[in-house]
Amino acid sequence: MVGDFRELNTYTVPDRYHIPRIQETLTQFSKAKYITLMDALKGFHQNVLMPKAKRLLRIITNCGIYEYLRMPFGIKKAPSHYQRMINTIFPTELSEGLLIMSKNKSHNELRLVHPSPKTLEHKNYRR
Image (cartoon, rainbow, N blue to C red):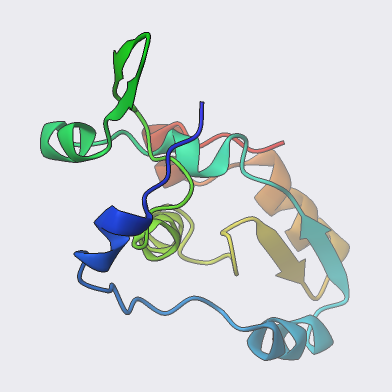
């Protein structure tokens, strides 16, 4: 099910949290010899919504009223909120918190085999 949040977004105050630019990422690439890229499983859908947000994100259909339990796509603040969450959980990794760059192979493998305590605490899954 997909919601159209354009009207809600017009009333939303922008969140100006820094989202990495491609040039920043490419600069980091140039310093690394080993690069591992992973993807967050279900990305935005790992963010549980607060009760007030659930009410604002209701979808009304002829079959009933539905509420998102987790962050859907299309919300103005979603990318900034997601990036802030990722930077909190993965402070040493880059971009979506799932790009590991190292100057040697053993350091790269160590970071892959032993996830950070915050990764385990937040149950943020990678694939």
